[in-house]
Image 1: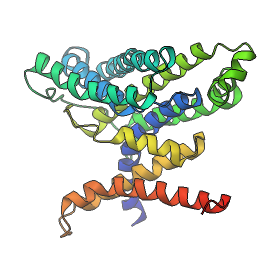
Image 2: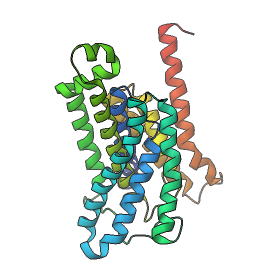
Image 3: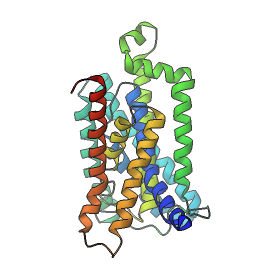
Image 4: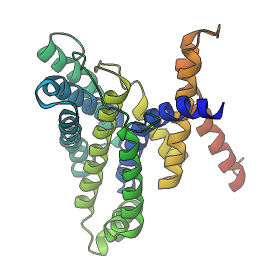
Amino acid sequence: MSMTFIQTFLPLALTISAPIILASMGGLISEKSGIVNIGLEGLMGFGAFTAATTHVLLESSLGNELSITIALILAMIVATILSIIHAFATITFKSNQIISGTGINLLAAGLTVFFAQLIFNQEHTKPFQIGMKGYTMFHIYPSALIALIVILLTWYILNKRVFGLRLKACGESPQAASGAGIPVSKMQYIGVLLGGSLAGLAGASMVLTQSIQYSGNFINGTGFIALAAINFGRWRVGGVTMASLLFGSAMTIAHMIGSSSATYIPREFFLALPYIITVLSLVFFDYIKMRRIGSI
């Protein structure tokens, strides 16, 4: 029974959790610099579209592994470039961060479909032959290993390097950081661009492990779940990781139950279940926090 559980639930949970972890780490880095990136959803969409398109066009000539590697790199580059829009608006022009991030999401919803029409004459990319391959006995995808590496690097940089301490100083007290000679705007630009890069990687790893093509509604709220994981994890790398795994596991259970023919509950309920769990978790956590500080 336990072996069956490991062979079915664990690989799927890690596959679904990996993009959430990558996006949430990107959002965490951005927020540590003082800039909230609501546009994680859109940046994941751009990354997923770029990766799917690149892989479709290159896999036949370059082979699976090299094509996927190039697809991941290009997805990060495209998302990083588009993050400049959010950084320029919020840091240089001091625009509202929520409005700017929402603009990125709307831009992704329109542009990815537009370019799909332009390249493939349809509202989604052509299906690729083979995505990422699971190389372990449990068919765990490389995206899980990538997510683990990103977790460790994020923790190390934010807590053990001068760069990370300066980045957090810019987010916590930009006036004091500026007085100490730290280039606040430069650090915030770096934080937003790094966050965007990881969001693009998240979208790419998602489409290459969970689908065979990109469509306009493919990301389906995963970027917002990553934002919820940042809040639920209290802006700590360990907490954000655990929250991402929690939400990813909830999505996995919903998928497994929803795919079972033994249930008479409408499939739509299980599609909504991960988001219901996410909202209820945030409400419950904030309620407990307010009780502890005596606000209610």
